[in-house]
Amino acid sequence: MGRNQGKSLSSPHHIQRETEMDSQVSDGEKDRIRQIASLLYEASRPIRILKTIAWSAEVKEEFFANKAQELPKVTYTPIDPTITLEAVREARRSIVPISPIDLWLERQANSLELAARMLSPSVVGDNAFFEYSRQLYGEPTTPLRYCPITPLELSQSICDTIDQLAHIEMDIATPEYHTAEEVAGDIERAVQKHFGEDAPKVELVDKLSANALATASTIKIRREACFTDRDASQLLNHEAYIHVTTSLNGKAQTDLPILAAGHPGTTRTQEGLAVYAEIVSGSMELDRLRRLADRVFAIQMAVEGADFLEVYRYFLERVGNPDQAFENARRVFRGGDIKGGAPFTKDVVYLFGLLGVSSAIRTFFAAGRSDCLALLFCGKLDFMDIPALCELYEIGLCQAPRHLPPWVRDPRYLLSLLTYSIFMNKIEMEPLVAVANKLLESAPVVKLFRD
Image (tube, rainbow, N blue to C red; front, side):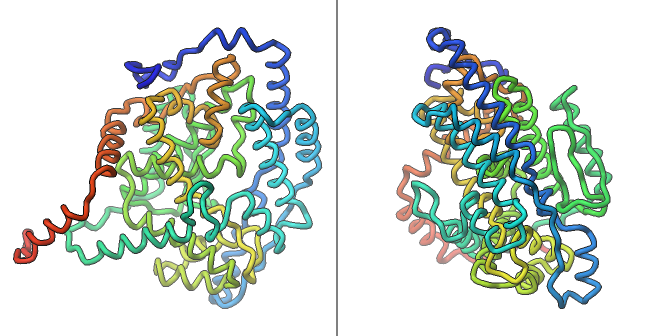
């Protein structure tokens, strides 16, 4: 593939440095980049978005004690944005946003500043929260940059396709359910094998806003959660093989510590990669795709004025489980206005991120750039950062990723999938579909597996 043709991705150190460019960059220039990256990392440290806008367990308890008939009463502890804003201001004094590297640094600065302002005392929990959220994550009706489709249209397309498949009669076995303790044991064995001495701890916790949450050091699983086999596989591929992987690789970037910091500027690609991993690992299922689409519909309901109760009832009708309906609605309203009109829009990035990551990986493949695929995992980043990271690697400041997901380390299935995808996209399918429909017109429907 290009200059790396014939090189396997089985080793994370397959990327070859070009020493000529390294020698052309002065030590002073490298020190400038290191200093800015360190300042931006310091700016990121106070920003803990999901922690700041989390709801206490008492909110849910009170909601159901009131028979799910009253709006939740939520309080937040905002952050003081001063440390972040001052560090960003200091970093910007040395950024000249012209080169790919400086443009990358400027994007990090912009994202951190907006995030800090979003979590400030006068904003979090207020209508102004939505204004920052939409700038950072987008909103359902805003088209993807360079592409006219919106998250709302993408979600509707997914649901329309799923509905077209609803009439198909297939004997799908009822999934077996597993306890959180069983799943935690399986996950722990898998991460120990994959990450070795860097493996995160796997902990069961009583209180957690989601069924699972991962950092570089810990994967937390809610003790009362229940998982199907696909849920467990999604958790491993989404949380461990993506979020833990990019966290560990980011922490190893001593010259560029900002790559260890997840922030809104990296969320689209990080979540898109995680959903892509579910698909390429065979963990994805239609219910999961519909849930991702439903989150976008719910955000748009809130944008248009629906309050928490209306969105809760929407999810209750969709999932039939009061506890899960509450958690789904909570994702929409955390940090925003319970009465509607100002939601938290982070959940639009999952499908949008999937679209962007899929396109980027296909482009890497078509261009013969296996190096770019590996660099995608060198830390917390957006796929638009790749040109800058290629330059940073060439001058010796960015390190090759130590850990890679299984489907990248052994890319045989990925390559065959991309080949098939590109091949099918070049074929005019309508005439072939018409022939197939003609063949089926007189064919009776048969029941292969009789009771």
